[in-house]
Length: 137
Image 1 (cartoon, rainbow, N blue to C red):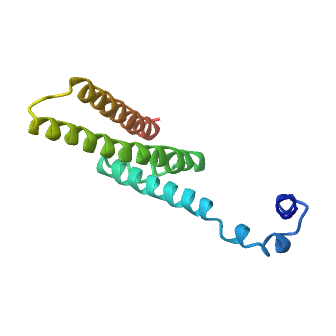
Image 2 (tube, helix red, strand yellow):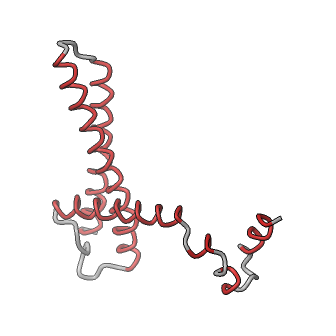
């Protein structure tokens, strides 16, 4: 019964003050986790593109939609792939050094890691190219 009442609180017709009485609506750990993850990806993506001098506006007359695409789409997705690239590099080095210790290389695992690294780099290059094309439109 209490769960049904809480679900009904999500209805837009319920006043915000009533919704704020419940702690889960004021402090939602899942929402905070999603926002923190998005911010991390955005910062990583911005750092990656700053290396290629793409960390700022694409042009002095940058449109609002271009800024939204650059920040919310390109930086955020690139940041996720920077993180994935780091994990894939770690996995590849772990496999290579572990296999070197036992004098046996698992070519299949190394190949899988190389394909993953290739795809990560391909996506990051695509985002860098998108920003380049936006700059020279």
